[in-house]
Amino acid sequence: MSALAGTWSLTRFALRRDRILIPVYLAVLIALVVATAAQSEALYATQAERADYARSIAGNPGAIALVGPAYAVDTVGGDVAWQWGAFGAVTTALISMWIVGRHTRSNEQEGRSELLRAVPVGRLATLTAALVDAVAVNVVLAALLGAALVAQGLDAGGSFALSVSLAGVGIVFTGAAAVAAQVSQTTSGMYGLVGAAIGAAYLVRGVGDVGDGTLSWLSPIGWGQSMRPFAGERWWVVGLMAAATVALGFVAYRLAASRDEGAGAIAPRPGPPGADPRLAHPVGLSLRLTRGALIGWAAGLLVAGVMVGAIAQDAPDILGDSDEVRDLLARAGGSIVDQYLAFSLLSMAQLAAAYGIQVLLRMRSEESSGRLEVLASTALDRRRWAAGYLAVAAVGTVLVVGACGLGAGVADALVSGDASRVPLLVGSAVALVPGVWVLGGLTMALVGLVPRAAPAAWGAIAFCYLLAALGRLLSLPEWVLDLSPYEHLPLLPGHDVEVVPLLALTAVAAALAAIGVIALRRRDLQSM
Image (cartoon, rainbow, N blue to C red; front, side, top):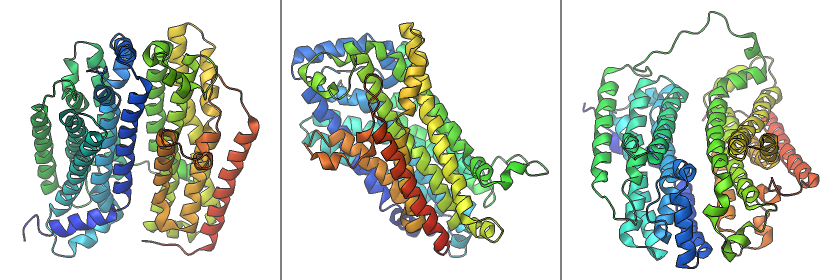
């Protein structure tokens, strides 16, 4: 039997499993990039305003380190490419990592690959199907995003250069994820390896861009930005990405052909002879199972906060002083610096909701794998088990969001020389937590009521992002905007704190969580 036998069937199966989440991802990312183009055109109506904006960026090392090199930002297309070159590349890399992990290492860890091996399926078919799935998603992204930007009125060459650069980075990290899936014996370990590689690529790119740019060529994210969309495109960089992907794919196939089913190229360290007593408690067990997510999200948002705080004092120069900018920032109070920090912290809080959802969806994973059934056969009550995950998600959210505020506060204090900025920004960030808790409560409700639809909680993040990015641009009614919990949060610093909305959001989150816990207690367990 061929090593690739059954690849097409597995590819169709993988695409079917992703039939909801992938279209949502594509729609959200494309909508956000197109919205950025529309906002850029509206914010800087004259060429003089845009030229001032470009000069402020070119002379700001902090902004370049955070976002990337400024190529042709005095044009709408160049501004979009600058704002999304790095962040969009990180997004495509993470999605590619998730797709490969979901259809390779996760299948092995959960035992599904053994069932697949019971039918005529080649040894390398599973890996090949995952790679085809991830590459296809990135190719579709390149086509749709490029077409959407052209429809927005941007130059076709620059539009497709930007979309291809983002997809190209995603494809490179598809290869990296394939290698990591063979090296690590666990899904979390695989995600940790690839996540570290993405973080390193982002940091190396930042250091290189602040310097002479040489170091940026060691980063796939730097490769994508080096295509220079809307600024004299360098299409030959695609060849560099293709060569790296082929090399990584070759390594992945060699490792896959030589290792045992379920094993990794690097064996995990043996555990201690006795279990930690804290694992006997639901909170201790859930914390142990999700501590990697807590560490990763806290570290990532801490770094993001540092980068945001490092350029906060330059916000007046970067944002400019057009009527459109003033109208956009009118929702927040205080100085332009405080307004910039308020909106930045709010964006980070929206992102932090992914941590809580990830933790709570681990409950569904434990149930579908059959491990919850084993726990439920003991004296452990399901409500206590769920409460452990809720406690970890709730407290972890405070830590993750607080880490972002801490990073922003320390960086801003170092630049401004005002040490009081540290507690101010930590408190401003933590005040946003009730909004994040609402999405966590929604996730718990889905896990309890409709467990198979629980991954739809990711769509709640996408919905909130779309409302924030497009709601006012499309002049949506206020009641539609109010569906997002983030619309009811204070924009701090620079705005008065209203306790009632925060208490109301907390109550909504608690009610949703309670509904989920009660439903989980009453329904049958589902192992599929």
